[in-house]
Image (tube, rainbow, N blue to C red; front, side):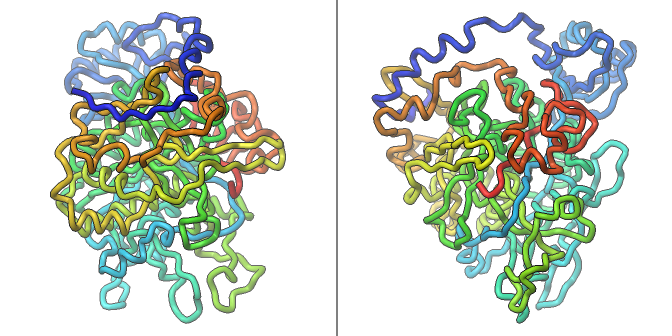
Length: 615
């Protein structure tokens, strides 16, 4: 039996008439075994695909691919699939095999950071120092960072009795085709690794008045490189890396996978190979922490940016993280949501996401000599005066620099998970997610906030509902206290994020899966997880919140137009459009997004990886 979390709002009646208009024309018929983006393939082209079978693929099925002119790439055992390059004309024929369950494009994805100009606090707002004071620093916990690689820098060394004993990067492997180097050739992975497990070596001592530490400053890192020198990768590479993390779980005590990357949603999570892979890791006992995405300013589906969470953050199992602005203070009470942080409900499946939010805007972490992100973007600076006692106010640090995005928030959350698992190693992923959500801070948020783009004059509004902040602001100290005292009382079941539905009589209702623990007891009811008035809105605000578009019932990926639209996501006049991260201001251009040569054309769209400056 499904559980209902019901939130009534008399102003939401507009929803009843929304579904009738924007998607009145039914989508064109297509082969249900083919993802919609494959139907756009040019007849004479060769397409990178992931072919999923009912059971693990055999040599006979591999031969069927090569006989049709295909070239096999990887076998992805965790999801009974192979990746291959196949002539577009052979796709329909391949699906005639009854053992073929589904064929999707091997989609491109990328990292989730943005351009910035100043540095802020990260660990203080989540109360990590209180956890460190109790002796927990992530020791013994392995975190797999599936990203652009990790470079060995001072802050990633280990210490015993105050002495450096080597790096805490226990294993490295590249899954980037044609690139065996495990080092970071882009800069994103090392920055994320620092937010997870940096120990502040290069900002500790008499010379420094501020130390930059990750949330779990003694956790171990497993470096699984999937993004190339442009910050781009593919589904199949990420899936292969996830499989390796599962295989290495016991050897390195891998309890967390960090995914600060992603791409647009093209089908239900139940068919998406990337989502299926993260679920295998989750079920193997690894907490998967994923970025929500930086598309909160994408107004294609809704004038307030709802419905913009991306894959694999759309999967109901994983812990999906949005980004907060810490406002350059240690306290969380003045913090605001970053305007670019993606909002739920998820496209197609309508899961309530993100699950939590964490510091992600203007956060300082690691760089390395000749770091491409720092070299190519000289405004990405942390001034020496920001952390050195006698630091030059005009000189930039060569060991630290700031970035913004849900990538950064995800790294902070992964470190927090490592702290919990050191303290309570018996926790399984669903318990970790449930405790983090229930114990997140919900009490101080404003009802709304807004920022105005200085170039376009567009104002972006944020309303602090579960589609924007999830269950609340990460508080690792409160979660640790709860976990130590009450872990045994967490009800059995999954912590799958609930589905959001709407009808004019009942307003917004959260429907939980029958396997979920939500609502099993009063302590795990909606008011404790999301807050007592989670979906309450003032009179007249429903139009602003959910708008006159088909947010509910939308299932056509082409509705995600702003992700690969004809103009830059933030407007041609904004700083984001001019940065090296975007290349041309047209995200359909040949140098779009990461300066890569591949055009963004719907089915091969990369994530919109840049987000607004300091907002």
